[in-house]
Amino acid sequence: MSDFPQKIGNPYKVGDSTYTPEDVASYDEVGYASWYGEELSGNQTANGERYDPQGISAAHKTLPLPSYVEVTALDTGRTILVRVNDRGPFANDRLIDLSHGAAKQLGIDQNGVSGVRVRKVNPNEQERAVLRMGTPASERIATPDSLLSILRNNLAKLPRPASPIRQASAPASSQQISGSPDRAVSASPPISGTRDGRFIVEGGGRPVTVENSVGDNYVGDIPGSYAVQVAAFSDKSRADVLAGKIGAKVQPDATRTIWRVRYGPYSTEQEAQAGLAQAQQRGYSGARILRADNQR
Image (cartoon, rainbow, N blue to C red; front, side, top):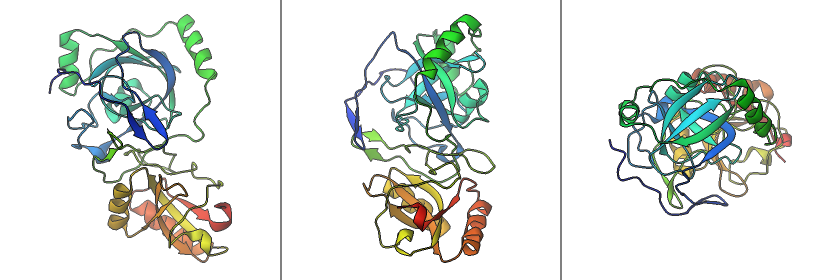
């Protein structure tokens, strides 16, 4: 594993958004961070390395690979050094995706989404080597309250993600989306358990209105029916892998850019509750029940 050659890369498109990688020496932004974890252990990152969920790494949409950034948790002022070696997150309400190890060192691994400051830095070779080995570099000096106040005010001007991001376990493999390895677009909190993944579960575990879906198995075609949504991916092959593993069905959204993994349809809520229990027993604690009339 090496920091050279550093890769900037060509512009690439995910969904309707185009991202242009660039080397901005003065990069310093506030936004929201989420994290991803164990089920992608050993998978290839965007710069060709193997993902280590306990390493101190991150995904960013445009910074060179690899890059080094200081990430500050804006609720506490705690700051750590992180190595960026992957692309994402492709939910536009998030600035950075942290590895589980980075989120744990920063103290935000119990949160779904956290306000952070991300500042590009040029650490010494000793610190770089430590992070390349997968171990944490020495923690930075905590950010002073006066600066934290300014950063929090800047964060307050941004829209908070529509639902907290909470990942759950699922197998996945590196894919390409218009020039960049695929990553999930958002996630939401399960009822309990740990977050381990980069796929999404829409709606935060509560009744929501979602766009009409298409497909032979769309639960909305049966009035009064229910479905259990386990996850949703921005890549169909990942959804197919998970559905095959757990005996579920894959249903695309109206734009065919999100692929949902669901059990059902069920004719009664009681049957859906049994499906929900099945999903949770398999470790997908972010699964939730959808009713057809809530999906129009």
